[in-house]
Image 1 (spheres, helix red, strand yellow):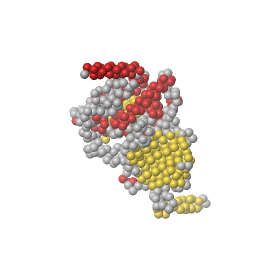
Image 2: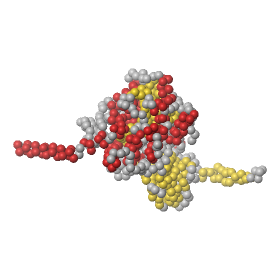
Image 3: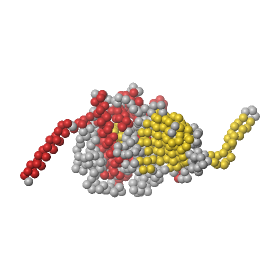
Image 4: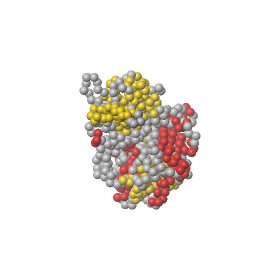
Length: 624
């Protein structure tokens, strides 16, 4: 027994020696070192681990399960300016079991850890190569691509690699001659550990072959490793009338499948000239935009809600984005099948070339804010990593209001990571250049923007101290002066929700809706009062309560962030808070003259609106 004890002691001392040598060779500065509470998963610090099974989705209970606490920050390789881009995240501090109620939360965190660590390795390598200077050696996000510089084009199709994904306004135009059926695929980035990349869109065109009765049809679908193929959509479709529109466009144009026989009629008028007109005989016959051996020009365009196909200048189909399959994930465009591709051009791509063409860099950087600076208003702007042009347009327009430039109002962008490493590198370079981005180290997803709203509340009450906190989007034009005037006029500093208030609206129960909500997610017939997402303001006490409740694990998670804010405020009201709902119809989708917030504006429209205000002090909308 004594010999056994001596042997065990020797082994223990040997282990201590080995660990000591490891620490000497691998100092903390080169590792992601963090404090691990007893319930942490030390292998993956952002994975959920609990001694008991997590509560059911419909009743998470009141327990708070800590998941993360600065687990992914390699402080030693960051400058103070770089660490400022993580101020909101550091104070976010933890996830709770309730956060699992958000769709794709686990995947977003796990993939975010991989993306973040890969980014930090690149940052460290770049600093070693450039001896600490900022800026990647080469920009890798071009504004457009063609078959001349980034693709393979051949008789049976083409492939185009897109290094930084697609964004709203991006388009892919291809000229082709089909000899039979073909397909177009928008393919996502390959993920670690998965055998195949996701398909954001598969666009199948079936052409009738000789001596067959095969229908002419267009089918659209998505595919992922986890869920396989989705629900296929056809055009023409028998259920077209019952389907919701995408960006106000039909999912299948009503003329597909129906064309009227036409004849040419000529009439000679009194002046001797001849008028030529088309006369339709009223008899319908089958029509299909793609024909064997006929050249066509097709354009896939990225909208705000989905992907639209135009053929020879006419709208054909629209396909809504599916959850966790957004356009910024696209890494490759593939055209295959019985088709001769003549050319492929991708334009309107997210790019950071503005960094080389900006002469007024300091004028675009925010005013320095000491800790706990007292502000009248803090504005958090939701954005995604490759929406570079939108952020630049915001910096050049309404972020130039005097109240922003003098430090009465502060504006920050809240941006998640991308599965595309190149996009993340460009985002990090932009963040340390302009110092107005708060990076959220999880993979961006529409169903997770509630996390960003919480982070905005945290930043507006803990990093700075603002009387009011506003949330808006990167495609919104905010008249900062008029927002401040409205808050002065309302003269309420507690329990305020100001915006485009909706009351008694019913949840979307259609599965193909972008805002689809299951009975499990919200079992009631109507939502409580809430302010629409283009832009709304809450008073400091509400933002502080949101931050506190999330920290304590008492905040109900809901994937629609603007509705979620309404749910949280109702809970506060039921517990005694006197709430003031202040509706302003000048906060609008699209644009209406006299707007306070105009949503869904392109970068060009943002610049146009600002020019009108600067030159003539007009709040007039810009024509398309």
